[in-house]
Structure formats: C-alpha cells, structure tokens
Length: 71
Image (cartoon, rainbow, N blue to C red):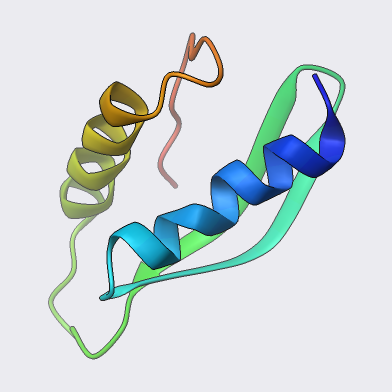
C-alpha cells in the first residue's frame, strides 16, 4: 500500500462528508488508522461514524477493507 495514497484516501472523507473531520492519519504496513468525528454534532454515536465509513468504503474501492474498528 502506498502511504501517501492511503493518507489521501482517509483525508478525502472530510471532502466527501462536509460534517466529518479527520485527523491523525497513520499508515503502517497494511493498516490505515485515523481519528474521525462529526463537526458541530454533540450527539454523534459510534454507529453514525461507522455508517459513514461503510458508505465511503463502498464508494471508494481503492483498498480492500477487511475490518473497521470504531472506538
């Protein structure tokens, strides 16, 4: 996996979803990790983030996603 391409892929979330903020993108081996949140929304639940990520992965098949962890 190209690290720059992986970082761009993660950062693109904020462009696709105007209410989503992405930070601390880290690429290590075959893993991409980052912090994500919804700006201006105090009632965001982990399932809200997971739904957006699942939708984004379906739209952008640049990488094969095996697992999504929300913490």
